[in-house]
Length: 212
Image (tube, rainbow, N blue to C red; front, side, top):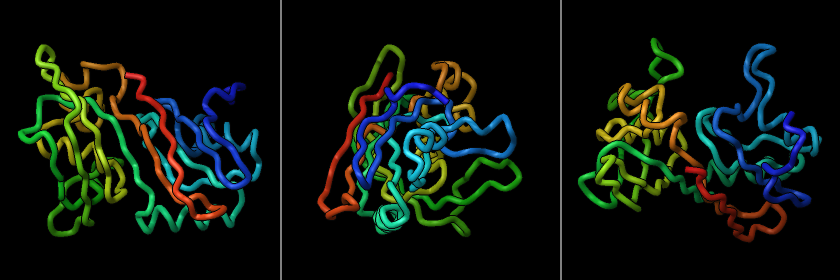
């Protein structure tokens, strides 16, 4: 456990907001060596904390935890019903042809190469990502993007950006070696969340700036 609460951004009777560091699991994995995770940190201080969603181990940023089963069900419904708005920051290779757009490509598990996902136009689930260019670094030929995953498929942002020729810098699963080598971590961060509060349904927003 971290022994610190610098990762805790908000707590009330129904809702916890935490900032997950890159390289930390969201929830426990299989095996004794995969028990350290953000959920364990949170539940050590808030025993009633319930998992609502996850971030990839390589991704940093905002995660929501519910206080109790009722709040967990309400927040789970909000995520499933797409009444939760999520914004990510990513640094990608190159520059997209358009400064804003949508990536609408169905995704499915790449079973022979798990945990990888892949674009699958026949068996994939509908998946939609919106993006907006924030800044293009001509010297390094990278772009800083704001991303909105409309759907929430596993590895969606990583696969969608790779599929349009702009893999995320530092992505050990999907980027070519030269793009992986540009950063010591995946440059993907969950920066902003807007969601209906479980207590009264009013929209609340939380933000945590990208550390890159």
